[in-house]
Length: 523
Image 1: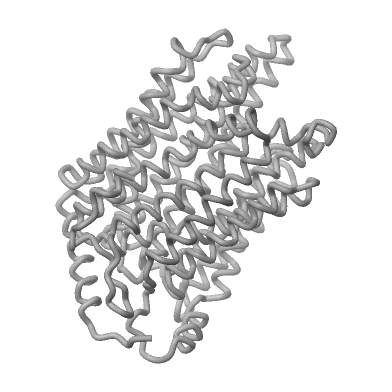
Image 2 (image 1 turned 90 degrees about the vertical axis):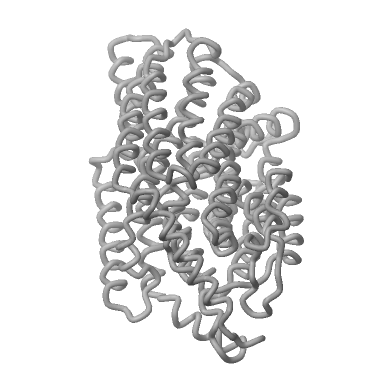
């Protein structure tokens, strides 16, 4: 909590509630947003190390899931999470960020409780899908709460540094937490653990947060606001983009069992492309679009979302392949593998903390380029892993470097994506960034898994040992992963200069101050 308390007391860093003009300490908003985002990101990875225990027969306290059922314990969450991020971001702008935050948190917490009590495959898969829905509603609100609270560019950079550090380390800490809970208690606690955290967070948010929405100056009764919010939600656009993204992720994760060139994969990708194309047409011609296409005229936002695809692909894939290498090749237990990721998690926090202090002085562009190059070099280092490797010699140093580089990139990436964005569209910008990072992770992981599997299968056909074949597949995937990270670093060169970035943030802050000083109706 000490990382957030340093923000307490600064009048320029307090949330001005849009209806009653009551002030809320900015450190409280930061703490709530960070804990919520950490919980959502943690849940993406915490279940992974528990999968073998979930698959055990009922006599051994598992659910007896087969391989196809087991993969949907993970994929059901990823599918709905990615599909509802844009919807969640826009809903927060229209109906109130506090209200949407509490709604998403409630769904996520209840679904975690139900999943922990699951008795069969259908029950746990449905609860994971509902969890993903709640997470997709909740995640954009955590970032939009910060961008509407911290309007001065240095304060925003520090706040986003803390937020990015907690979000970025969630994946690595998820492996550790999953290993500890599974080995020492039960696999069910990787889901139950969200319940007390969610309940405490709900109580804190209900008291500490104040409502804010994009149409804060709208006159009339509360009910009138709700009706106008529904009309502004762009239902056709919401349906097409949510369905399109969900089907796209479904097609991508399905390549584990259906090759990229199969009729099922191609037809599913075709449906996703048709839905997303329809969404673009709707947004182009509707009067009140969910995603106004003009927002992509902001060069920083467009470039940042492109970079987020590369960062998501590299980060998700790195943790996935390292986890497999440590457990399947080196023979680590779930607990030991989780502990092995701890130094990486600390380096993500260190990189994010350092970049949050530097981004106001040097701008986002340089930091993302440096972080991307460092990540690319470290991933290529991983491409030389041997089948008889050891942690200290072959894993520790490149893990420290790649995690530091990724942590170094996360804060300036978030700063770039939200700088200059109208306060009324803060949730939309947050949803876009989370969506592109999640879809990038799913796409990159599916493509790299195919590359690794093809390499390993070819070697096995030539009677190469299982460990050596698997390692060679991982090595090839890391080579491609390094080029993906390099592409992100090069794309960062298209970001505006530091002077342009500061000017955009300060203009946004001035507009925010004008909106806050304007008279508004009191509910």
